[in-house]
Amino acid sequence: MPDTETAPERIPHGPTTDRPVRFSTLARDAGSAARAGRLETPHGAVETPAFMPVGTQGTVKGLTPDQLWAGGSRMILANTYHLALRPGEETVAALGGLHRFTGWDGPILTDSGGFQVFSLAQRAKITDHGASFRSHLDGRLLELTPERAVAIQEALGADVAMCLDHCPALPAGKDAIARAVDRTIAWAGRCKAAHARADQALFGIVQGGAHEDLRARCAEALVALDFDGYAVGGVSVGESREEVRRALAVSTHRLPEDRPRYLMGVGRPQDLLDAVATGIDLFDCVMPTRNGRNATCFTDQGLVKLRNAAHTRDASPLEAGCDCLTCAKFSRGYLRHLFMAKEMLGPILASIHNLAYLHRLTSRMREAIRAGRFVQLRMEVLEALGP
Image (cartoon, rainbow, N blue to C red; front, side, top):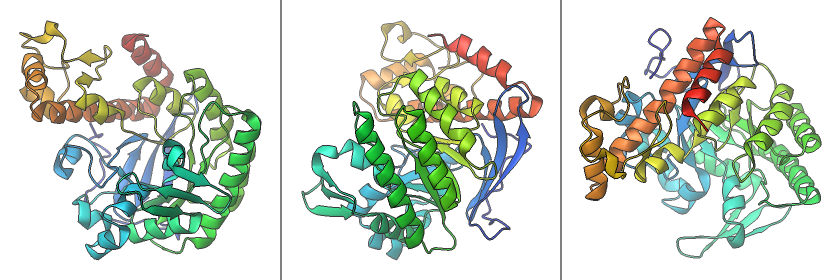
């Protein structure tokens, strides 16, 4: 849950520099590169490290904005490709932009659609000009160039827009990954030139697979373009935990100290702890809500699978000491019953808990960084989670 002494006001307030977002480092850990900070946006401030729930189509599945806020969410993510297809960015703009459209008045980040270049590769034709997709809804053609990705995100009105990038599907040879890095750098320059909305930040995305030289080259080229923030991409598409660590080790320290750093698509507690140790500030992933919909929940002792018969008459909460709505009011036995009966409340309550767990974990990280004991916290949590 959010830190009581630093929880951001819900009333929107903007940054005081000429950039649409401002990042300040408030504390550093003595034994690692971990840092606690504050990201200020036109729709409010976010204490970092922070986890962003994924609302791909303008909604975090099954949860209302008030439930997200009560559980500790302070910034959410939506997706350019999906919203451009349905209902269309013009419709969102006509209905007041993403914040009014979704009812979420806190900060919003939009993915550029670059992940769909990877995940829908069988439907896409990728050239240096951009990517052309056949819609998974009706088969119509969508052309996503760097300029088009920026224009869609400007119409949506997110606080943070992302550059269009190219993340090649694995396994891929180094030559293919090098070509994707070249394309990512070129597309980033075109996004920078096309971006004109003064109240919206633009982040670049570092690619390069598990190759340290490619990661370094991409990071240095993007820093030269002077973005408002930077993301490390391409580390949630099948790499090992050690490969992710190497990608972070070579990428993060090359990114500016005064800009936010965002690791895309990562949501395992172990991976968050690893990434914060290298200086990452922001995360997003579908894992907490997807796992919740499938009856799997995060706890400090590891994953709990609620369909297991052992929970049938278990009167205890999902996690002792958790103050989320799910743990405060409902037993494991009741939660199992909801899943076995296929009641929609089960996935909702499990998702509420999983998000609250990650927000509580990032809050503990912030507190540990301020106290100079992040390394100790990381070891304690990893040991408790087990293999």
